[in-house]
Length: 173
Image (cartoon, rainbow, N blue to C red; front, side):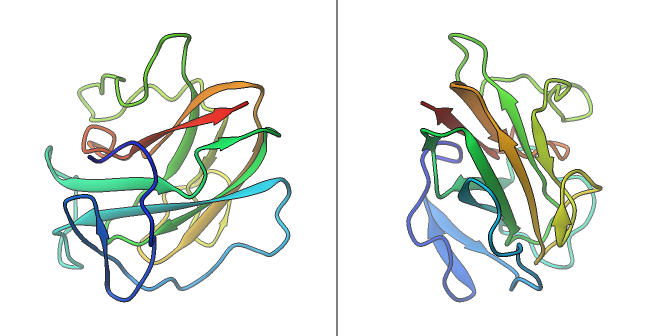
């Protein structure tokens, strides 16, 4: 299972058991600043069976994952800290789910991306806050958002990453 609930043991050595395999990851070269506002949700971004030697667009069916340490928040103000433990560039985008819509059901376009025009926040700057060109391997990006009560989807919108399982539901109660 690629999307869904967070796995335990998000870090540890050169690999971590996540679902049905081992996700290898790069050591982190930076971290988010202390004291970010709201509740902090640590989000791990990764890919499996890839190495430093791989580049370009990920193929369909590649094993990737996005796991948040937090899947709901009663307050609504959340600082998402996204750590790219994989080899490929990743990002974290927060989008609302419409009534009755389930996470993981968006349809990617021909470019392998889903529509993110309704994005409420994005962490895609290596070792920095907010939107950028993507969180590179071994880097951390972060964003603080205040979300009203509702259902949301955390996702990576690099080409084919969403279709390859990089999504998770997040609820504000």
